[in-house]
Length: 131
Image (cartoon, rainbow, N blue to C red):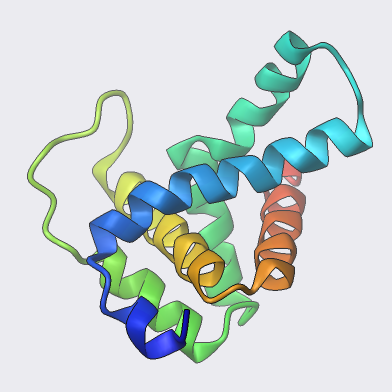
């Protein structure tokens, strides 16, 4: 899909798809790097795919200019989308930033940029592991 068409998607639809895209990228890395039982892999995955983890990673990627201007703009557009429901057990600010990161991952998936998704997943894991 071309970029212009991908930009037309509602950011919440992108975030919905991006949740799966990001989690798949993380799961793939965990299984490749440390093959364990599914239970252990799931436990390791949680810290990376939680709203708190995604939010921390996204904020640092923005502040360190890891993301392009286009990527930052899409993330911020999704982050600023009006949210009707309140997430359970997570700070609303973290939830919104995490939603932005998920929307970005979906956008990259739709335009076929798997390499950039991999780069973002690698960087997110590095950032979150610094905790």
